[in-house]
Length: 196
Image (cartoon, rainbow, N blue to C red; front, side, top):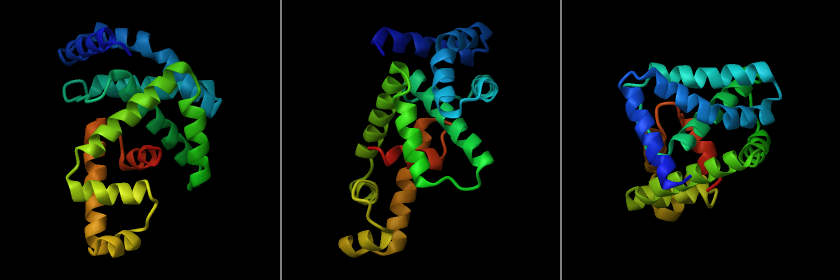
């Protein structure tokens, strides 16, 4: 994503916030195809994928006044698409095993050159967010995600209560969620952060 493309996207979002429907059309024309391909590579269902992409753009229009994109527009749309794909899987299956998430990650991020780039941008964004956390919060979060330590193990290592560990992780995930935009959820933040 070049700087001029990012600037163009910022301008599109600004126009969108001013109720400019043509901005939504431009965003749709620019991004629907890679988003559709990415979701189709996971779901293999044309109708469901079309519905997912349509829902994303309806959500963007409905939330245009309050939309805050702190990452690039394509990363934001990528995160929204992945979130809706996961939701679809949840509706079909009450439980999603960790192995399925790992499989989804591989298929999603390497589905197309566009999604590979979007995944990279999303990961970089999360790395930046984590780096900006308060030192203790960052340490706890990284021990949980990078070292895969349990709350009890972190508690023992840092000589703090498990409740404090939980508070730090909750705070970190809250910051990540807020930074990823209104359509991200804790589940998405948790899942993405496991791949840092």
